[in-house]
Image (cartoon, rainbow, N blue to C red; front, side, top):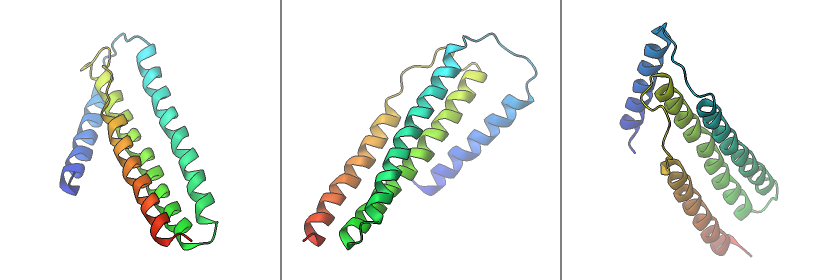
Length: 133
């Protein structure tokens, strides 16, 4: 995804947010829907905390391969924080705009994070083989 596309998504998100805040009417919504969106975000953030702890551990080991691997895992942890937060905002806006009364299961976030982790872990393996002892 290009940086221009990302900026367009963020600007669209902000326009939608202003539109929802400008509305005065409230709709009856099943309370389980917003709470499930929040629970999903908290699960992703918990996973990101675990990855960032692993990153800090690897960064403090001392050898060059561990530092590179710790940096790569840290980048993956940052992506596991930012992507779910934007997804959370988008789902929250969709629910508040009544675009989706019952949100459908979205596998896009899981697939994106799995590709990120697969790339990082394969790079970690490559760095360990090249720079390892």
